[in-house]
Length: 291
Image (cartoon, rainbow, N blue to C red; front, side):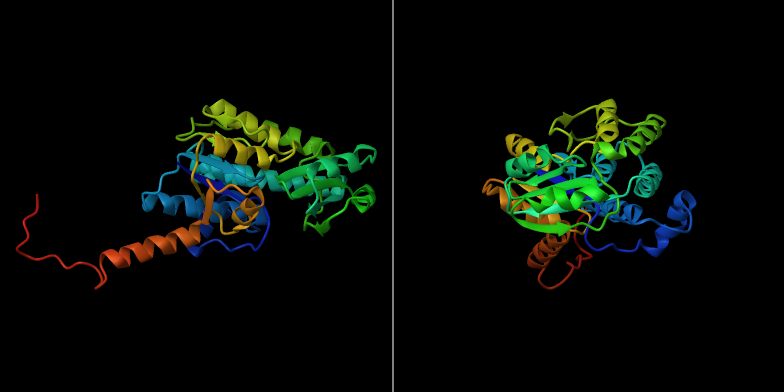
């Protein structure tokens, strides 16, 4: 089995292709937010995969990547995805002004240790269970530093100004719920694994409800990987240009599940085509009979 996985907001941001700009600006205006750029890149990869006849058996996304996963599963069209992600970006930007905060990744510390350290520290919670060796803490601006100070491990502050995936942005989450209720979802063409709890989503309503929960709920990527393993997924392809999920997969020590980026897969397919036709495209013999 093959899974398509989509990273969240992070890493470098690529500009949308010039031919897509009129469609994008018609939905989001002249200023294109980074979240929208991430979605566009992932959606382009999903579209190209269809042209290459690469069909996943299941999809999953990390945080913002869940919108790209839902798009790849056929739950809504490109323009709808643009609009949804633009609304999500707007609500989070407003949350950053009203409830400033941030996120810090804790590397090489067990999640249980992070949870214990935060238990008696108000203002901060676990936002992402990314891997057995990486946990992200989300918190209010005045509390975040004190919360992570007593946790062992390497700390990396993320480039966000809001406490994502936490109860501190509940107002933004409620507004996103209303937006999602206003959109018609289609039944996913392939199952989608929810990063809220690792459940397998097979109906339009289930995907909608998962997206309504995910803005405030922790990202439980560890549960996603566990579900993919139980489903006997042997390879995942990471679309969206980041590669972060594939690098993170090394923390799980799962020899049965291999990860590859879409760029590397594309290159692999190109080499296979060259091996089939080493002299270039096969020239048809005019005398060949065709059915």
